[in-house]
Amino acid sequence: MSTPVVEITGLHKSFGAHEVLKGIDLEIDAGDVVCVIGPSGSGKSTLLRCVNLLEQPTAGTITVLGTEVTDPDVDIDRVRTRVGMVFQQFNLFPHLDVLANCTVAQRKVLHRSADEASSIAMANLDRVGLADRAHSHPTELSGGQQQRVAIARSLSMDPQLMLFDEPTSALDPELVGDVLTVMRELADSGMTMLVVTHEMAFAREVADRVVFMDDGAVVEQGAPDVVIGAPTHPRTRDFLQRVLDPTHRHPTAE
Image (cartoon, rainbow, N blue to C red; front, side):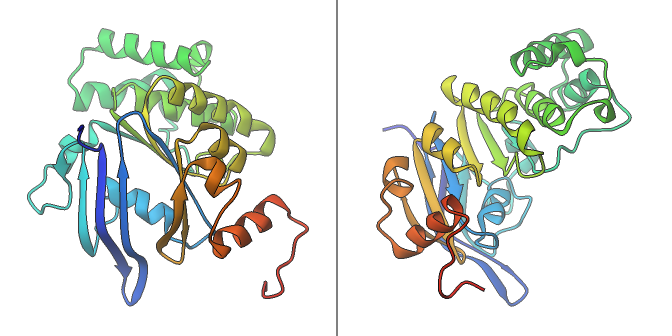
């Protein structure tokens, strides 16, 4: 049996007295696409950020690609070279053009030559449909184009795992589709992906498994047709009813 790409056991995270994650257990196998859904403040993004130690867990263990990242002696920079992360904001260097944004980490971290880094970057820019914008600066691109550059930048590091933290939430609605298309193609290629998203149609179509979180805990998880199509837990049903039917108002809603 193959080792999970991500194995999370008993994960807790507190900020002061506020407990954000309350004992998360989660496994992700190679090639799986796992979408995490849930209301704002449920701990989704904190969970994702704990996977590559952008947030330090309070308790529990996380193993990524065979390395326990919660070990105090872990070389987290080495693990991060194999884990791509795409944020809500694009985090591109504004003073560098698109190609340079996609080559700087390759050269500094992976020690690739300029020619090799450029070749790999151009292949990934082509993959996201932006090879023709290689010499544009981020300010010359739409938000959707900047997010696709951010994905190409991550892919240029040859990751074995991709983390997406609500990658479409900062985009105008008409720009969301192009980013989701790139993510669909990435999933189809066999990339292991952990995606925090509010795009229910994407989660239902692309995910192998959907995880519903609420109040710092995993409430329900399973196949998308079950969790989104026929949820068993009342909290999941209530959340989806609110999200999928904006006119719905629950009696206890504020």
